[in-house]
Amino acid sequence: MASASIELPASIETSSNLMELATTSKDMPSFSEESLVSDVPNEGTFVLAKFSSTRGKKTYKYVCRVQEVSDTKIVVTGLKSYKRKNTFRIIEDDISIIDFDDVVTYLPQPENLDAELFKFPYNIDVYEV
Image (tube, rainbow, N blue to C red):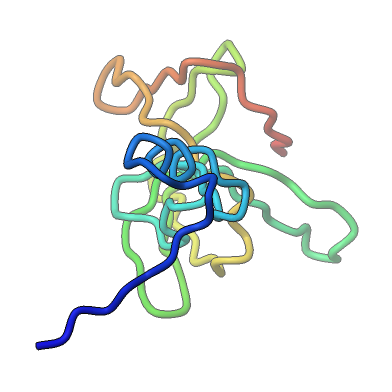
């Protein structure tokens, strides 16, 4: 087997220079953790979702918990703010089917205060009826 000879530029003479170049190269694409997060939520994930009024003149934003995910739709349970902008209570029988485009943002896993009450680490900007 013949060995190939590769000529390196003078600026890359030692392995330490090569390592420095590899870790500081501006030609390499960079990814934040957020850009690597899947666009498909998992069951139990909390999202901020948008809903249009019947006539489509207003857009509301609700905290929702994902119940089921299909190829094209997401089944969610709605939550309503409770005393504060970071505490939400599950609304019994408030089930909606939304499109993936209706997800405004994914929310962090909240602290579970009881079976139906959840507290997020920060205030959430909702627009509820």
